[in-house]
Length: 192
Image (cartoon, rainbow, N blue to C red; front, side, top):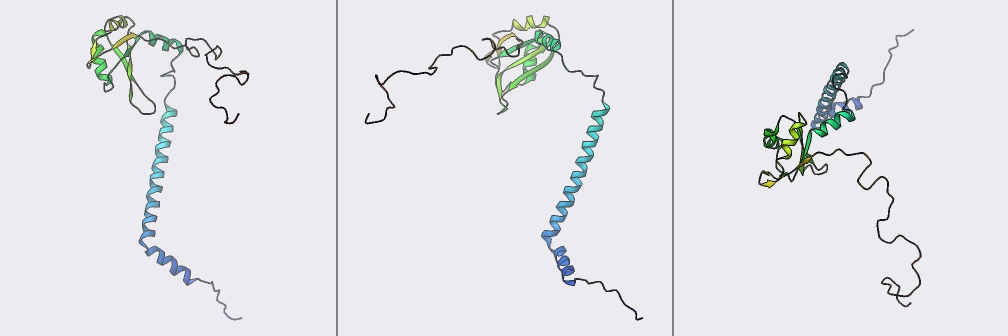
């Protein structure tokens, strides 16, 4: 028998088109960007794996969640400071109340949509006795404003001072039949 060569059909036209694409600078830039994004994705996967590993390795018994009793105890050691200047920092408030006693935390509340301060703050002291000294600073001058200092109150969930639920008469028209066509009716159709 004769020697038969196995011929594999080649598409020289397709190979030349691929070679031409490799020479295109836009394609080269895209390939470089894809490679760079793949490297960044690998770095992010490594960082995520390291963070998950660190999270699993830390014991959760070190910092238990605050119980209701802990929160209530912190509220008894805290004060509300009203009429705080909007540009005040927690460090400045801490310096203002430093003479009252050791301060654990200063919290300036901000609007959740704009991020701007609301104009009041909470100061938590190390001991409940320091609250009395801080209450003596009511109507003191802080950054050109008279601040209001009161003990922090504990909110009771679901209670807003008027009771629970929606009931009760709030005023206004409650519906029903109002009567005939006598009197002034401002939205009456013309011709009637």
